[in-house]
Length: 377
Image (tube, rainbow, N blue to C red; front, side, top):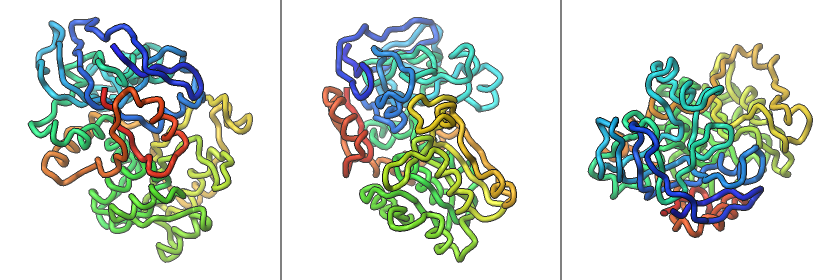
């Protein structure tokens, strides 16, 4: 089968690889029809992880079931399914409590498994013609009859829509509150969108890319361009000097200033400044235990200078970690099905898999207009 394969820093290619196949009775085999490029794919693409050459990338996947194992009861051949990026077993202590992003079974010695991702198990990614889905009954989200018509919307359920929603859940966003989101990439825009769905009265989105800020404005958020002045000051001005009730960090360890200098803790510390006393912060931007490409020794060890004193003095609270997609994807599926949510508004390009290398180049450079890419194998 054809698949997009990692070769080394900023080098991917479409190559012939062994066909995905059933390996256990509980597996499902999916013909991939949509597979998205995620911002966290870029960490591997840029060589900022220890991903080995030859791995198939892609953890945001949707497709049609073409084969099921003998132990699969619920999922049927022909079902259109969306796959959570985090693989769960369904029966470990964490999965039983809804923490499927931290499954204790699928990646022995670690908590959590992901398709096509460094350090998250041996699973090949879905930027390919076919994908093996372990524990298929548990991991496949079967889609309604409008699956093909709304495929671009449903494809967002694999990661970024639940992850953006998770940011608002970690921050405990409530009706009528003001929210500031740092980062207007796909996850940040989904966090802003989710905050509005939850009834936030005012949502501010901090970024400096005009095309992304334009999308924030399009969904009813207030675009805050931090290249025009300190973001904290702008948020305080917009909130009468008190700060936002809640905040979401959707950038991660590659945060940088308008001049391009990496400052891994900058968004965290800006959120401490921009969120009011006793407010809450949700962190879904990726932070790693080690970052060999970090700008200093501290960041290379996965550490950061956090403004703990101010954070403690303001009595704020913080929640972190990857989204447990299955906690949210059924409810978010219902919003799409009923027309209440249309997350595909941020999709800028839908391209054949063969153009994957080109798409990675544009998305990695943050070229204007390349906000979210769906590949079609």
